Length: 166
Image 1 (cartoon, rainbow, N blue to C red):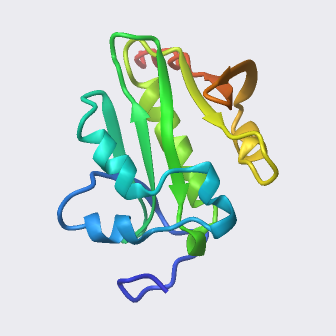
Image 2 (image 1 turned 180 degrees about the vertical axis):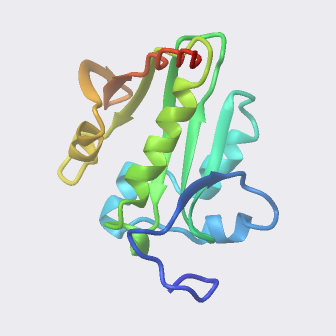
């Protein structure tokens, strides 16, 4: 059950929304499964870091009207590569495709940026890592290691403009 009293399903609409004073407490309460805690910082740390990094773009992941996750992007429009800095879906909302659909929305956001060509991310290469999940979205390992984490890349060249109908 969601906080609003409606049942979430795989058909729930996924959106990315600003973190505000109205939803902050709900975002801070979201936790991953205990065995996943070594893979991602908690949301309080991420939001605190975002407030000191002007290029941080962070959003709450919603399914219908329920906050189910959080993501943060290093968003520098002067560069061609963007970096998924944080990504999590609360333990009780995993397995419903909310994370996949949130990342698809993020990929579309990056693709819409004028200079964007690549979305990067990194993961801790241990049992239970999200590597397979990211691979399923088209990310490929680059062979690079950053701070002990394997780097993956997804080319996000903008879609060609649609020709006007004649």
